[in-house]
Length: 115
Image (cartoon, rainbow, N blue to C red):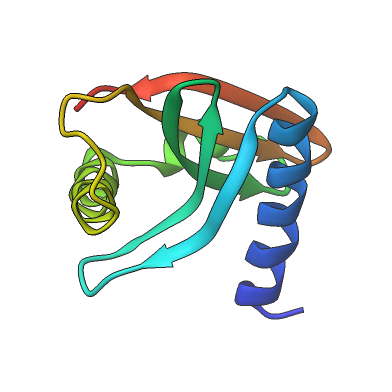
């Protein structure tokens, strides 16, 4: 599998995982010229923007070290575009989460970073 196929596979696993937690996936791979958001989902009344990171093992620190601040800022900018394009309230409930996959271990980190 190439890198994109691997990414798609693990994003699908992440979608299934958060749906089991009760979230509703509404969009995957939302792209703009600035960047991409892997998953957008509702968690009750909160719109959640999720970044998925996969590592085959934790030998280099694990998936949590793969979302640098620059990537977080890009996701926040893309989220603002999504909010504006979908005419959602600017003062709504929004959250930035991460789904971290290390080998077979999946962790969902709510509020992984703040705007």
